[in-house]
Amino acid sequence: MTQAIASPIVHDLIGVGFGPSNLALAIALQERGATHGELDVLFLDKQATYSWHGNTLSTQSELQISFLKDLVTLRNPTSPYSFVNYLKHHGRLVDFINLGTFYPCRMEYNDYLRWVAGQFTAQSRYGEEVQFIEPVLHNQQVEALRVISRGSDGQQFVRTTRSVVVSAGGTPRIPEAFKALKGDHRVFHHSQYLSQMARQPCVNNQPMSIAIIGGGQSAAEAFIDLNDSFPSVQVDMILRGSALKPADDSPFVNEVFSPEFTDLVFQQNSVERERLVNEYHNTNYSVVDIDLIERIYGIFYRQKVSGIARHAFRTLTTVESATATANGIELAVRNNATGEVTVRIYDTVVLATGYERQMHRKLLAPLEEYLGEFEVDRNYKLITDERCKAGIYMQGFCQASHGLSDTLLSVLPIRADEIAGSLYEHGKQRGHSRSVAELLLATAS
Image (cartoon, rainbow, N blue to C red; front, side):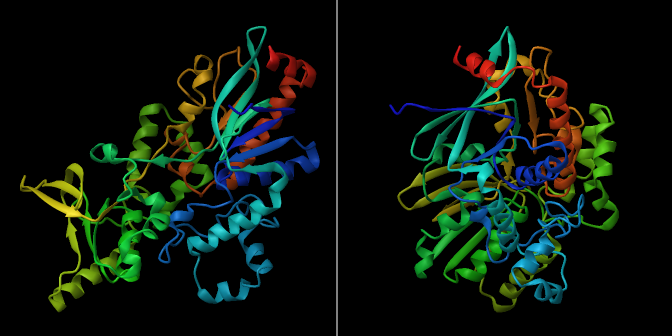
């Protein structure tokens, strides 16, 4: 077995993941470092190169928030890392203005993020997946953290840091009926949409029957892409609800994604926090942009006019079981209105079933005895017991305490600044009293 590569450096911060959240944090730390002194920061990302939801960026995929909610503008409109400066740098500022929209396509937003990330290459490592985070103990106190990662070639890396920020994102939610089919290339989550569709026979215009499971934005985008890009494909949309529901993005409701609303949510007790999150659930979960709903309705209406029923829209339907056969994926589905169970065979099944956010618990499991109930303070720092002197921060796992914006792009610049401020304060309180040599001695012990 290949020996692990252990770095002699003790970092001030290691970030798990280098998506938009940690990218915004890298900028905030750079800004603060100009006046408060730079921190030694490193971000680790499991992807081989920078990509934001790269396998979902179909031609119909548009950003659902204003470009002004980029990585920096809400905090510092004059930042060189703004989306507007990105457009200027690429010679498209006038063209984008002429589009007359606040919503760029996600393909372009991905390119913007890649452009920003390219300016932080010295602070980032790609192709490394963090396995877990361990305590570095000295006198029964957690003085630092040991971050163990594995490269795509199997090489293990061990690094030491005074603080860590976990921004690993969501993991695909796989319904129980499909868990036994893991590894079957005919069943895949929407997060793998483009790469998996590139392998399908319909690429060569061969007829295919495809089921999309889900009734949210991802399901709608997949349906439109299959309809437009693959004329040989017949699609069944299968959803538990009675209809595709529109996302509420009206102005007053959109205020729930403001930094001020984060303060409001955090100040409430746990019961009221949960009520507020549930009240605005239809702004983000199991909902679809109204323009996509109208396009899909138009497709089904034209089917009625032509008399050719290419696609089917199966509402109030639950998948009871999924079985791999030589002829395809056999789905037993129940109509919840009538109770009738029918069996259909599909060549491929796309699971547009959302994401779970539990990765932080897995990564931090070796520190569990110090973490309690994974509660965080206002600045996203985990509340640990007095034995843990290391700083542990989370981005994207704090919806229960900070509201719906925690998993979205809406408050990135403000949240990044809050975490950056807390990191500097944490370092000041500790005073970095223990030397690097002492920490490394503890690491070796």
